[in-house]
Amino acid sequence: MQPYQEFLSEILIDEPALRQRIAELGAEISRDYQEADLLLICILRGGLVFMVDLMRRISVPHQIDFMAVSSYGSGARQSGGSVRLTLDLKTDIRGKDVLLVEDIVDSGNTIAYVLEFLQTRQPRSLKVCTLLDKPERRETPVPIHYCGFTIPNKFVFGYGLDLDEYYRNLPFVAVVDTAKYHPTE
Ligand code: IMP
Ligand code: MG
Image (cartoon, rainbow, N blue to C red; front, side, top):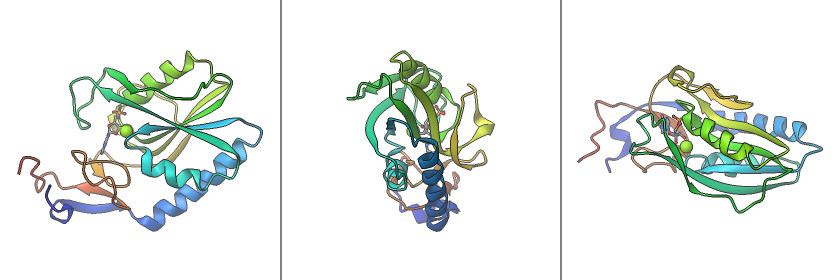
């Protein structure tokens, strides 16, 4: 993998901005879920870094779980349309107040699938918290109850979001300069 400095176009959201906004989201969620039986569900792998930071800003008692989905025959940068479950939850969500934690809502297909699938298990409530929203790319309308940042239609990486599975560890969200990124080298 190329050093990211070679194809980084700009840092879109830096560490202090992420920290500040996630603290605000945590406070908002803590207010809204005071009387609840909150279960945070991280959608792997992109939601991991966000959830680990967000949960430490949530002051009400809650549980966590993980699930994973993938799009049929497409990488993260193509819009899939068809989504399937690759890792199921350990928790019985019936009667629980479920909050999905996602890195980015792009086409909306992933969240639409997950919401429909989880609804059949009869949680008490089911809401969506996404770090990033790219509304220009939406194909399927989905409800977003908590959103960190609305971003333009650019491919981003870092802070959980990958570039061909690399660089999820970066502490900021950055834009790829596609002319300078050479995936096959
Ligand atoms: P969807 O198109 O809303 O179904 O999003 C599918 C998934 O594609 C997201 O959960 C992300 O993991 C990934 N994705 C979408 N846009 C980006 C991006 O700009 N960078 C990295 N991953 C992305
Ligand atoms: Mg994702």
